[in-house]
Image 1 (spheres, rainbow, N blue to C red):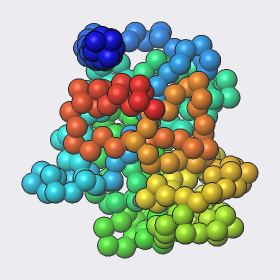
Image 2 (tube, protein in one colour; image 1 turned 60 degrees about the horizontal axis):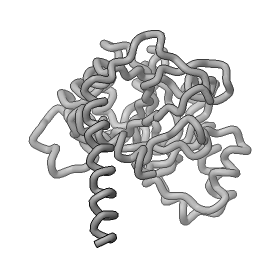
Image 3 (cartoon, rainbow, N blue to C red; image 1 turned 180 degrees about the horizontal axis):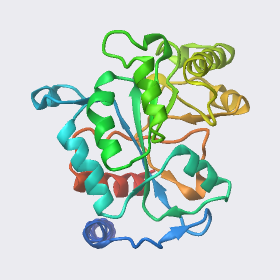
Amino acid sequence: MKKNILLKTIISIILVTLLVGIISIGTNKVTANDQYKINEKNLEIPIFLYHHIVDNKSEIEYDYMQTSKDTFEKQITGLENSGYHFISYDDLIQYKEGKKTLYKKSAVLTFDDGYEDVYKNAYPILKKYNIPFTMFIITDYMGTNTYMTWDEAKDVQNSGLGIIASHSQNHEDFSKLSVEQAVENVNNSYKTIEENLGNQKIKIFAYPYGLYGEGQSEALEKEGYIVDLTDNKINKSKDLNVYGLHRCYPLNDSVFKMKLKIIYRSIRY
Ligand SMILES: [Zn+2]
């Protein structure tokens, strides 16, 4: 009998939490002045990760790495309409250092691997809405096959909206590399980036496949890199770690589903 009451209480709490979450998704519009310094409020700061942004919708459901151009545009405009502001890594770091305030609803946009379809399909949309973003490129693959060229990367950088960052030299599984090999790989990739695009103000790295070995993030932090994971979790400002930033996949989710997932993952992790 007692067990039953406990179970009912737990179910009620879960239902109320979900209901409050759903209501807040619909009604929580944020005003322009709603900005906070770090420690003022515990903000949830999702970093969204995309791979391909494709034209052809029919390919979508078979490939977890693709988002259609139309869905992508709906996702970013939908988030903006519900109060989200897209920020850059620079904004995030300055916020972490106490030099900048952030909107209550802030998010970061990233694209992994450096596919040319991102340049062709997502980049015009990002320019249209003036949205900052970061592309994590595989330096050895640039200009080959389906990957962006260095000229296109230069164009992205010159727009002032896009940052070109490292996703390693060759997309190796970093969990199989020693700490020294990991650092060397990222250093070499940034050497190539700077040879092609000039000096970079901040250096950001995202692990290929989201895999890494012990001690690598700490070693990369010492080298001055901002480090990104791919773990489908949401960053929270109270324990914001710029050497282990969480990223999540929006894929082809509706804006409503994206917001539900933010709430769910914030509660869960
Ligand atoms: Zn990748």
